[in-house]
Image (cartoon, rainbow, N blue to C red; front, side, top):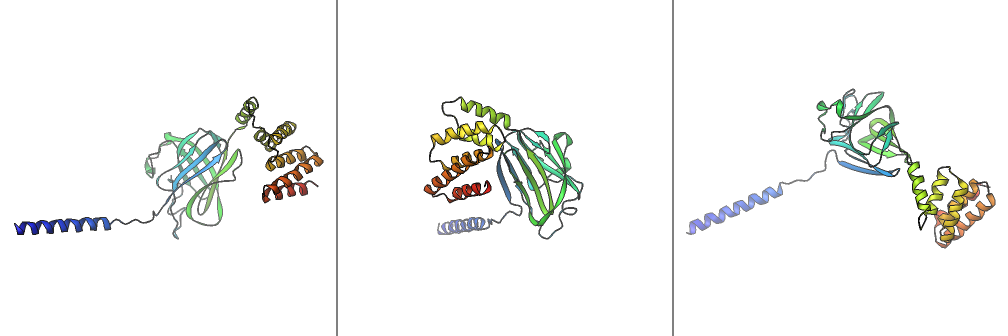
Length: 283
């Protein structure tokens, strides 16, 4: 009986030590090509890119690690995905809202960048099928200002209706122009807002001013906005900009000075500086 108890105890101890060893062997290390997700508001929607970022590590990338003239997964690990929540144009071609795989064929002087409907292809580019291609864009390469160690996708030069999607690695970059047509929808929403119980006068005036529309109408709306919000220094700054654009320098200066007074009361130095600059630029 004693021998059995001793054997059982030794077995339990051995199992426990094995279990602890198994747990201790789990090692966590950084991913060699870490995943990144970037989301950019664009137009009335968003653009999201999800991709893994391989590192150069002193290697020659394009024409070597990434061969010229062959389909590349455009990143590492799983499929690089790009999602548009709204319809856009890329290099002038219509692209419907949705999620696409992002593949490319690098060449020395230009790249071909493709949107792909099959999100499960991953890096199996030998199985790339032309029938799954949604769109293809041919764009010139440029040389980066400095070496880009990690493969980078960015969305820059963001304006209300256009932006730039850039792919960069080592000393090479390519860029694609994104555009979106939102004017008809914004104008419709402004019309609907003006018929509502609480019209958004400030936003409507701002859109008219920024997009070169009827400035007299914009002034009418911004006047109503400041009447409703007499302490809103940022609204008075917009009013000043509209008045200056209408060539009414006296009114523009008065509204800019009102902005300064209200912004100082609110302890907002940024708007004080903006109003002072507006006055100086319109002397």
